[in-house]
Amino acid sequence: MSRALPVNKNDFIDVIFEDLTHDGAGVAKVEGYPLFIPNGLPGEKAKVKVIKVNKSYGIGRLIELYERSPYRVDIPDSEKPKYGGCQLEHISYEGQLKYKENQVRQVLTRIGKLEDVTVHPILGMDNPSHYRNKAQVPVGEKDGKLVAGFFKPRSHEIVDMDESVIQLPEVNEAVQTTKEICSQFGIPAYNEETHKGVLRHIMARYGKQTGELMVVLITRTPEIPHKKELIEELIVRLPKVKSIVHNVNSKRTNVILGEKTNLLWGSEVIYDYIGDVKFAISALSFYQVNPVQTKVLYDKALEYADLDGEESVIDAYCGIGTISLFLAQKARKVFGVEVVPEAIEDARSNAALNGMTNAEFAVGEAEVVIPKWYKEGNKADVLVVDPPRKGCDEALLQTIIDMKPRKVVYVSCNPATLARDLRILEDGGYKTLEVQPVDMFPMTTHVECVAQLILK
Image: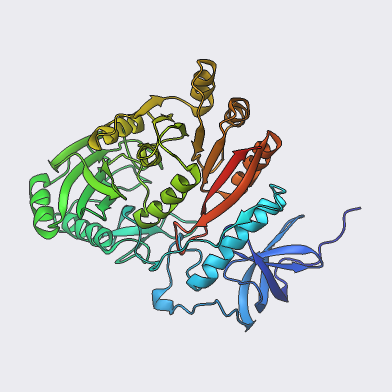
């Protein structure tokens, strides 16, 4: 007979929060049964209402705080985000950093069984607001005017946003100005229910080091009404704009960008720097959204690679070559691999842009291409991985173990899959020396890490 649950739906109970989940909800336990409550912080005592229960956990809503965490930040109702994304905005920045660092330590111990690895204090930002260099926001209509912002949590209702605490001011201004100009010319918003209308999304990208701005209009239709006047107005009202691009997405889909992109005015790309390396950024390029902390992250990856100019380095999941070109400043040769053909074209262009002749790039899945290189005798001294959130493919991890590069540098955007993969590499003959967490995305639950491994 299954044990009766210690709580029922609609119960009001008093709890003490013990921890935070990976997505920032407070964790409380009733007779060992976990309740997840958004907005609760460790150490706080509160009254909560149980709103959902199943066999293994329940969901609650915070009703009243009896004792507050010293890390809690009060946000006036008028300033509370009406959209998802900033899950930790109610926590002081000191508290956010502590939570993220603890999360890394916990998963390395719990998932990776790595008890003796040095985890350094997390590297945070001096100014943890207004850091994102890119926004892509949906467009809708309300009371006859365009609105552009974010979807309300668990809905498709668009909340108009004048400013986002995490976007660079130039990006905020570009989105709002573009929305106002499109509204002024009566360009209708796309309606996903009827599949009618024109303007689906507005994207803005900004080169923090160069001051160059790109505006991308994403529409359902191949034509934009009042296109000439729209372009002229954008140029006047956004003096930093260097590129105005039109992307057509005519499909019924949640995917933001379509396959067809046209240049309306200016340059196909804008430029930015990470350290001394220059990058060309197109409307479709993947480029890190926090350039300040990207430099911190890549400097640490370069330090862990510990290159003296004689090494051959493989960069798995190389994207547009951001880490590869950082490494190429110190390595004899860098080989990058990436599954997206357009990203490899960008990587090759970026190598040429910086006059780097010691970086080669190949299109394909890392777990297919690198084993092929290994069989052909291309053995790396140092191997760098920067995989997506799901972590490294098993075939790639096995190839690393077979290839035996003397150093592995693992750049991770998900501590849980990092811990899992470090365990596999440890069992395959590697030793994890140290892990450096880096806060790339303040106000959110995401945390990046760089790990250094050596062959035992």
